[in-house]
Length: 199
Image 1 (tube, one colour):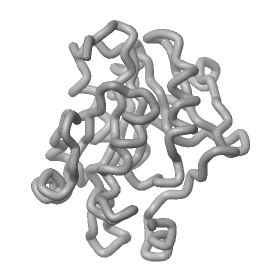
Image 2 (image 1 turned 90 degrees about the vertical axis):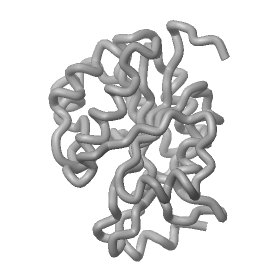
Image 3 (image 1 turned 45 degrees about the vertical axis):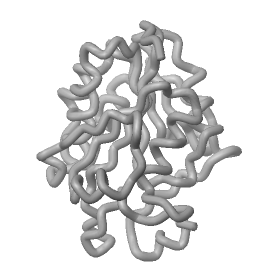
């Protein structure tokens, strides 16, 4: 694989401990017979991300052991208990100096968002200043693409479980929304009841 300046890297945030799921890390939940993190990384790759970074936290050693993540860059987030913001910062830091011009960020617990939606967001990337988000009936959701010019600002504002929400709100005029409600469902796997969405 040749690394080109126009490369978009995939970034899966998969560090959470599944507090509302009785302490079962979402990365290890079974979906179609494999760990959910494996599914999430595969979606990014199939959509066109040549390189995928996966941020791990809760039971990271077990995730490494059970999930087939060959070819992915595995990033440890020792501060994962502080929330998604810390994972976003760790993931973006791992891309520094990689030559990627943008990062396409997805969450491990949204298996209803597949290749079609990710590919639409990816296709809207123009350059390192791009800021693109999937939308569902006009409401911003995931995945979100951050051009490299935004990484420092996103990292600086990412806190707790809010991730990049504050940054995206502040830069709403620069954000391109790509409607994906016709090809994806943006539910989260947060509670026991949500497990019915997994195959």
